[in-house]
Length: 71
Image (cartoon, rainbow, N blue to C red; front, side, top):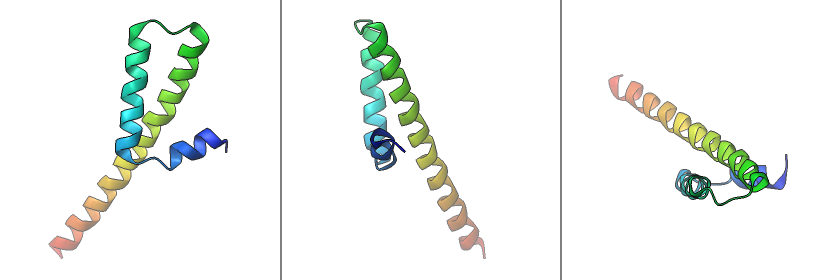
């Protein structure tokens, strides 16, 4: 695992979302050269996957709490 992947794995949901939002703004500006745009897109995919994983984990926790409350 590369250092950037490890850094992404340690981000909170809020940090990952903030990074993703900043990347989208840069990409939408159209001012990045092609290579930087591709790198930003790749980073955005990693951040998006991190957000999705954190949301999935939170959903699982809530489902367990809901099941416990019903018992």
